[in-house]
Length: 113
Length: 116
Image (cartoon, rainbow over all chains, first blue to last red; front, side, top):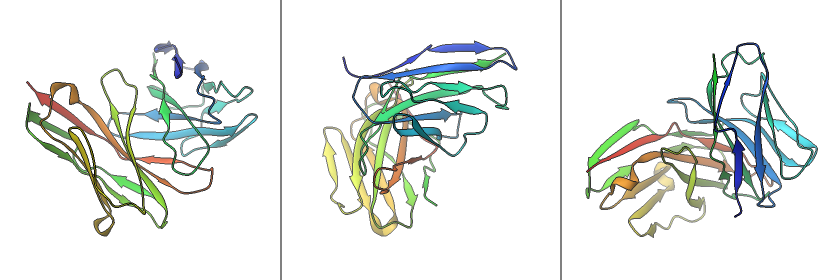
């Protein structure tokens, strides 16, 4: 089955710890994205990548880091510098072309204890 | 800067009623794309429709229909004869044409509850 997988579904971390969220796609898409969703705020873009070994900051990149070593994978690290990391994180991918829809994974809910 | 407004935070209707979700957008581009996504309780966003700024034809897909009006910068979504399975959060989104540098701007979503 083609799609996007994110793991884990639920993640708990202690304050001050870094944590990495996984995102893998087998859709052969060049572009991948990370969004954060908070109640009542919709989705906000953290980072995106349109080609391997290249990525750009989105609207709320502070406290996050990413890598894109393989086309299929786009892991997101939530660092201890992120002031309020508790949120729902969604990964997406798309073809690189004007107006193409993004396909989303099932999300990871991160809770900082 | 582009912006999407979904003024309805929550809507509840009784099953089989029709319901319209509003979406108003702002952009300075003449070429842009509008989207609707559905987020069921499982959390994954499901793509429903894409519209480009040059195509103002309304679209119907089963019980779903979309009304795109450039004159009022609106892209409203109507569900006819609603069903309990339609209960979800619905997001409207906007993408400006940037030749490969596409970014989606989302509205804050409308939570739709269909009461059996």
